Image (cartoon, rainbow, N blue to C red; front, side, top):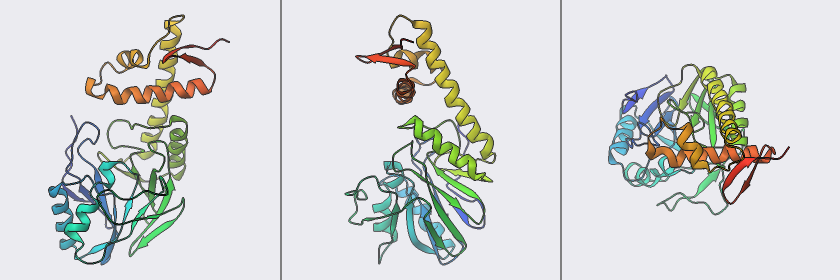
Length: 284
């Protein structure tokens, strides 16, 4: 069972978490969004999903309580549960001028959904600052090609987006670069991680090392499964049903994506071969 996350929680003098109120199999308790800074204008990290009035109401209450407004919105990546709430915030909370939307580019013609705004694209190591808080962009692809984490320099805290979650393990598009991104976060030696989903990670080094070890272990299990099946060829879903048998079937489709990422990595390394969607040991 997932831990209970309150709709609003002050995590430090600079950070307030506002829950996106969009629970689900992939979003856990919901998308975590964060209001960062100490002054009259603050930065919001991520926006939850489209048309979730409960979320925009919570965000408005926080802005009113602290007598503050938005200096800008930073998006960790393009997925709908992180950018979907942009237009709702613009329509319901920004009665005058729109605020800047900061994001790492996915494509040159990329635009916020349901919005007439445009993105201000950031680069790796850019720093976005407001009173009391400096956020350095850390480009961490793997979960998606445009994914960034944000390093709060004043507290050595990492907002990890979906690179590291508070509960369970993350999904990814490219395992090879995802592993490099995990190592990058590990090298920053953060005190805590504020994830895009799930509880605060109070033991970030242990958590990231677990992620790395888990992926290495999963790769070993996949290679062992293929080896034991030799000379029979296997499909990725055969592997899922064996290695993810304790995972609810509703998540098997996502698990299959992870397995295929492992298979592609093993294929690139020359350890396995593929024909017509079936995998087998490569000839030595």
